[in-house]
Length: 101
Image (cartoon, rainbow, N blue to C red; front, top):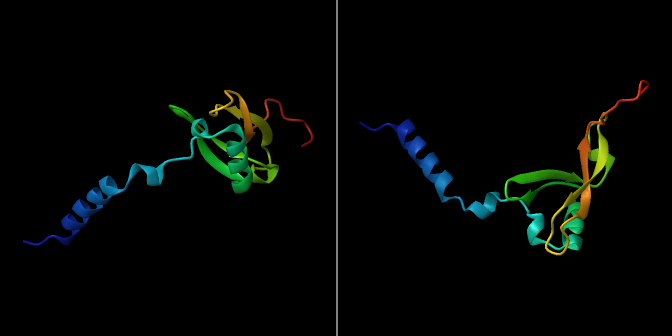
């Protein structure tokens, strides 16, 4: 008996395993120089980058990439030539909110 849905499920599972890992990989700050990482963030405006073996960060260049209640905070990440490279900014809620915002 032919079951098209079962065949579809098997093909979908195979497709997941056949997609190369590089196709889904994030850019890694550790494989770039500091200038390359800064330029990458500058060119894209907002990007998620790998910053360590088990860490990643969304980096932005401007306040417009944040929600209106968020503020920009500098973000440093390790690169090939600088362990504390200022690669861009992160959007985060401030610790204290002003009363009249």
